[in-house]
Length: 357
Image 1 (cartoon, rainbow, N blue to C red):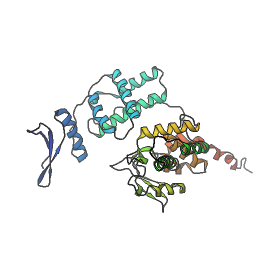
Image 2 (image 1 turned 45 degrees about the horizontal axis):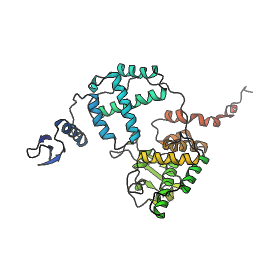
Image 3 (image 1 turned 90 degrees about the horizontal axis):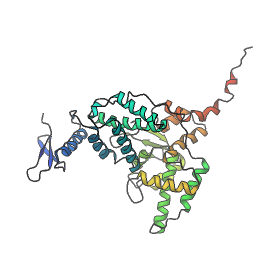
C-alpha cells in the first residue's frame, strides 16, 4: 500500500506532502522551508487524515509550541496567557526535557512545592488540571503513550461556592444593557442590534446552562422550537467537555431569540459576522455587571451555575439538572448543588412512624 511522504521542492525549497488518492497522487504544501517546522505540520496533517504517527522524542517546550498553535483557536487570550505562565513555572522547577521523561513522582513534587509556597488549593488544582490537559493532548497526538499527571495525588478542595445570579441581579444586568450609552456605534439600528445581541446571548446562556464553547458552536438547526429541544453535539467539529452529545429542554423564553437568528448558520455569530470571542464577551459582561452593581465575581460561567440553581429552586431533581448541564456523573452535580436541596429533606424523616405501635 502506498504511503504519503514529504519532500522539498527544488524550485522554491518549500516542503510538500504527497499522498495517494486511488490511482493518483495529490499534493499539499506545508508552506514551510524549515524541516523541523515542516515535520510538525506533516505530523499534524497525518493525524487529521487518520495516518499513524510514529512516537518520537520531543522536548516539552517544542511540544508547547505545537500545543499553543492548535488551542489558540478555541481559547481566549487570557486563558492562553494563564497557560503560558503555568508552563513557565513548571519548567523552572523541572527543567525542559523530552515529554516521555517526566514522571508522576516529579509532578507530585512540583505540586507539593506549590502547596509549600502557600498557594491556594484551587490554584494548585488549576496547575494540576492544566498539566493534565497538556499531557492528555500529547497522548492523543501520539507524542507519548501515557499521561504522568493522571496518577498524581488529587488536590483536596474546600466545598465549592456557587457564584450565581439572583433574579434581581440578572434583571439589573439586562436593564443596564438597555440604557447603556453606545456612542461608538454608527447609527440607531446598529445600537439596537448590539444591545439586543448581548441581551439574547446572556439570556440564552442563563436559561440553557450551555458552556461558552457550546454556545459558540451552536447552529440554528440544532434548535427545535416545535419540540422545545436544544441539541448539543460532540463531534469532530466541536467536542463537549465530557465528549458526549445531549438534549437540553428549551425554556419558552428562548423561542423568540431562536427565531430572531434563524437566518444564520451559527446562532451567536456576532453582529459583525464573526465567531464570538471570549475576551470580548468577558470584557462587556464585566462592564455591565459593574454598572448594575453586581458582585465582580459573577462571570460567564455564572450563567451556567445560575441555570442549575434556578432549576433546583423550582423543584427540579438533581438527576434532571445533571442531564441538562451535561455533567459526566451525578457526583459532579452533587458536589456543586447538593447543599441547595437539603430543604427538601426537612421533616421527611418524621414519616418513619417510630416507635412502632
